[in-house]
Length: 286
Image 1: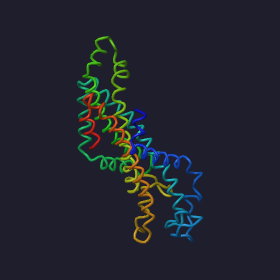
Image 2: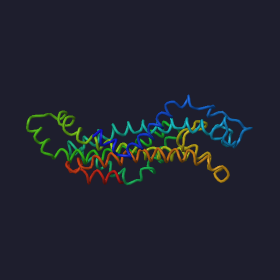
Image 3: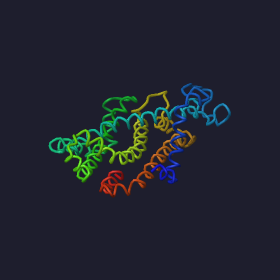
Image 4: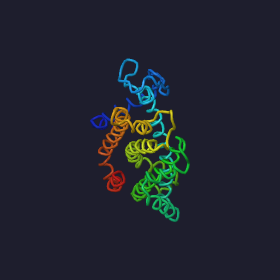
C-alpha cells in the first residue's frame, strides 16, 4: 500500500503542501522578522520591502509575521478538534454499531436530532452561547463534528460485524474486546483515516469562519479567519490583506482534499470487498 500512496500525484502534492504548512507552524517564532502584534501607526499600509516582506496592515503590523503566526492557531486548533471528535465519534459510533439494541436507538435518535440543524449554524449557536475565545470555539466545533464520525463508524461496524470472519471469531469463543480490536477496528481504520483527512479541511473552514465572525481568537492574536475580518473594510484599496490569509486557507484545505481523495481511490477496491463502499462514499460526499 505504501507504494500505491506515492504513485498517486494528488497524495504526493497534498503531503508536500501539508508538510510545508506544518514546518512553518512549528518554526513560526523563528521565521517571523517582526513582532506580529506590534503596532506602528506611522507605518500603515506599507508596500512589501526588506523589513516587511508582505507589507503592513491598517495598524502598521507586519502582514508576513501575522500570516506565519496565524498558522499555529488555525492548524493547532484544527488538529486538536480532530483528535477530540475522532475519539468521541469513533467510541460512540462503535458502541452503537456493535451492541445495537436500545443503545443504538438512543444514539441514532440523538444524531438525527442534531443533524436536523446545519453543522456550522449549530456550532455558531454554541460558540455564541459560550462567548468568544479559542477555547470556546474548540468546544463548539467539537460538539458538532463528532456526529459525522459516529454515524459513519456505526454503519461500518454494522457492515463488518455481519462478515463471516467475525462470525467465525465469535463461534471460536472470542470476547468483545478481541472482536472489536482484532477483527473490526483494523478493517475500518483505513476508512476512518480517509474521513479524518477530508474532515480536517472542513475544520479549517469552520474555525476560520467562526473567527471571521469574532468568535475565535481575540485581538491582537493573529488567526487567518480573524485576519480576513480585520482586512474586510480595506479590501477595495488593499486587497492583499484579505487575499493572503484567504489563499492560506484555500491551499491547506486543498491539501487535505487531495490527500483524502487519493486515499479514497486506493481504498475503494477493499471497500467494495467489505461491502462498505456505497455507505462510506455517501458519507464522505455529504
